[in-house]
Amino acid sequence: MIELNNISKSYSKHIKAVDAINLHVENGEIFGFLGPNGAGKTTTIKMITGILEPDEGEVLINQISMNQSPYEAKKSFGFVPDDPDIFPRLKAIEYLQFMGNIYDVPTEVRSVKIAEMARRFELTESLSNRIQSFSHGMRQKLMIMGALLHTPDVWILDEPMTGLDPRSSYQLKEMMREHADSGKTVFFSTHVLDVAERICDRVAVIDHGHILFCGTMDDMRHHFQSTRSLEDMFLQLVEEMRPGAGEQT
Amino acid sequence: MRGIKRTLSLACVMLKGNGLANINGDSRKKNKWLSKAGNFILLGFLAVYMSVLTGVSALTLRRVLEPAGLHQILIGLYVSVAVVFIFLFGIVYVISIFYHSSDTEKLLPLPLKPDYMISAKLIITALYEYVFVIVLIVPPLLVYGLTGNEAWYYFFSVAVVVLLLPIIPLCIASVMVMLIMRFTPFARNKDRFSMISGLLAMGLALAFIIATQSMSAFSQEDLILLLQSGVQDLSGLTAVVFPGVSAASAALTADSAVSALSALLLLAALSAIALLSHWQPQKVFISKVSWDFLPHRQNRSSLLKTFCAGNRSQAVHLLR
Image (tube, rainbow over all chains, first blue to last red; front, side, top):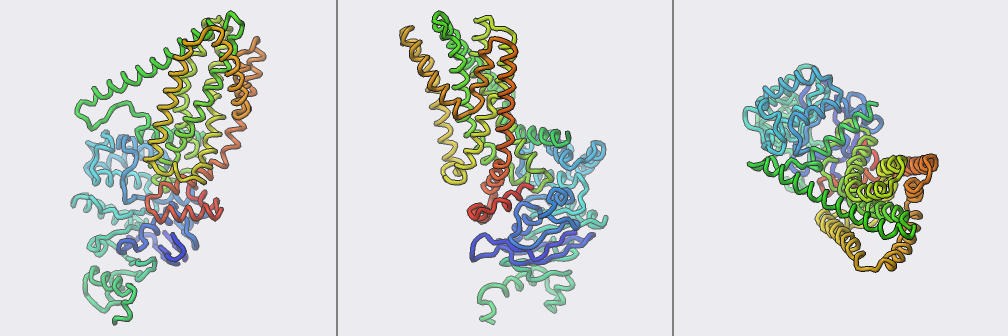
């Protein structure tokens, strides 16, 4: 479960990257976080994962406050960053062992999990290769494996589909569904609205640091009284938020 | 115990994963074995060359100073030169490992306590210093001991001094870096920093070689006078700036095992105090580091703002 209570973050006196947003992501759901470039998605994710501290408000992961107990809060989620470049000279298996050590995953359990995930992502043959020899997509898959090694209650992904081939993208969506179906939480940001439309139980649309909409796809269609695609509704939402949009209508 | 294991695991991963300990060549090259062998030969040659150079100069100086009964000033010279070099290279290493290493932001979402990260980075920095000390200071100290038939406790003192000597200058260097990064912008630019540190390293190496070779141009009497006054000045200065220098020198020139051990205990105590007292500033320091590594300009300015406002606890939180 993820709870964002009135969190704000500003980088300058005049601009708030995230402005008093509230979100409640339940166990067992896949939650899509959508928004155009510079909307505040990555800032929000950085606050959720403890990279940045909110100026105001509170982040709770599984009821644990990121501000008060960051160590415990960080143990309960797995994070896949949008930039998968880390420790390029390590071998893939060494990186996974390191992640296993950090999250205290028993050796037998991690061996089984690594083997299973490597098979799904077709990385079995590459585990003994250095990360620097991997393509962007392969690195992305490795980050996903590292984040899931300790079977976290909350799985957070920042733009996870970038660079993945269709088969891996399909596998990832399957894994997200399985994760949510086992009663755990999946929270991810994406630009690919098609993906969000197909796999998300709920979505939130953020722009200029404000949540424009939060609910199920049906809620959104009801809100717009339309059967249009998510892309159309998303564009309309974002368009309405643009400065001066209200004056024109 | 678990903390130590985790810290060591993190240090190993940082060392290996960022290529800091890489002498295996570029794995992307077709003939990586050739590249690996080339790296080994080059580094081995450099290490042997520097060791022989410092060892031979120690031998020459001992022969010059021994008849006048002044050979013990060599110990003061080695210890003082060592701490100055350790301190200067320490500044470069700390900036490079704490600030300009790209792993900090990647590690922030992981459940790692700030102490583990500081310790791991400090271990890596210390390892670099030890490589430097082993190549540059150990050979002359061993030559000094072997040619003078020194007692067992001299060699024991060499081992302990080599282990402890880098700690105090390294701690002072890391606190100084914190101040440099806080108040001056020059080292924040990675390219500019690389250029300046490269020039510094070249300058120091050149100065060392010129100083070693120019000694042969002096007459024996002039050389003795020069060394006597120069070493006294240098030892006096370094003893004030770096507590522990006097204890290290005393341990290496002790005439009994008891006095050597007492001096070593004093050095160990001073090193422990330096390590502990630099820990808290270091926490603030590493928080500042994370500011430098956050990729987005806004994030950086946000953290800078936090620091300028003096709200360090908020920045420290970044590494919790």
